Length: 128
Image (tube, rainbow, N blue to C red; front, side):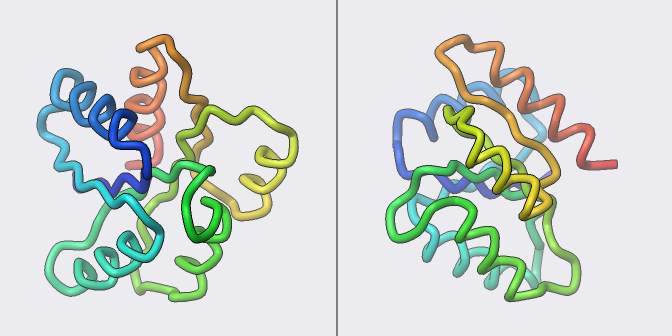
């Protein structure tokens, strides 16, 4: 499984990299620190080896995670990747936006490392 993680915080990105290396070493994780970079990587990967899933934080530079998801949907790839939101936000607005954009999963990022287990379980569900 190939995953692109859109996360501007290098500490959060590294935390997910380490968690996946421990929990699911067969997953290939690529990290993009900005929406523009993520869109470019998704476009480049379409022909050769498309990503199976995109994990998106909500709070990002340039645009928020839901604006990124809207742009990704507008690009309309032939086989769109699954979209998972992985964020510390539990605000009603963000939950409503997740429903509007029809993300495949919404996982809350916490200080508890078990949140990575929740993300891995969500990845397994959306893979089906």
